[in-house]
Image (cartoon, rainbow, N blue to C red):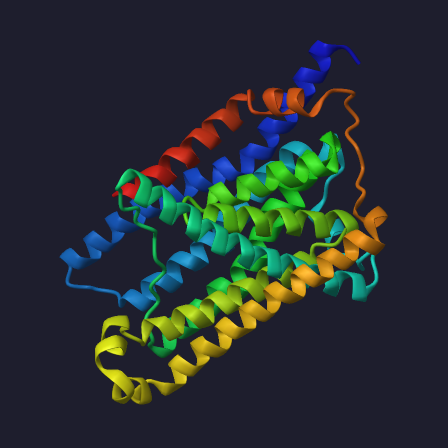
Length: 337
């Protein structure tokens, strides 16, 4: 293979990997614009929708309509060339259940290590430059419908459809360039896709481990389970924090704490669980490195080029340039406004 042909193929792969993510973003922007227009029109006629109902509708549109459309376009354009099919992701795992469970625990542990590191890093950046970054916050409320929406969106819809988009599609399309390369690039894409600065390192870590587990098991089911576990813990924390006022907790003393004992105890137990998962993940990872290092080996690229060249060519593809510039710019705007 000559240099020109290799560069062309890498850019083609890159463009196709960015395509479904770009389609998702464009459709979401269209949905948001249309939804505001529709809500304003309804308000002018005296019809209003409860905020909890609106959240549920928007999440259903995002995951049940927008993601499937993005996937449909990709597979219609790419399936004949690569033979990729979503149905092949739902197979029995190629690795034993014990191996899969072990790496899910390792992934969860490292995800929370990444979260702590991210918080420290951005706190340092804010202190160093004297700026205040503003993370996007998920606020579902504590009504029955809000609680349902929280877990339906975070624990059911997101794990299933995001894994189909990023692991079953973006990662698999990149895999021909080497599994480690595909893991890192797809993981970073997943992290930036959230367009919320506190989630970049955390989600990139989760995405990379999910890709690794998929690469070894050849099944999307373990990564869905991993995603489900992390999002469910996040959902529990969100619901508990939404019913606790930090200022009143400090000033109200034991009386306020006792009146909110269930969410308070739940938060404390969840924090202990997270630290337990971090320790467990670290211990298991060290054991893996010491005893089973060969199992971490992955397939190399079919293109006889260096990693640096692959990165430079991959990120010179037009759709990938557009996608990453948009995600980075939107992340910065979200952080400062």
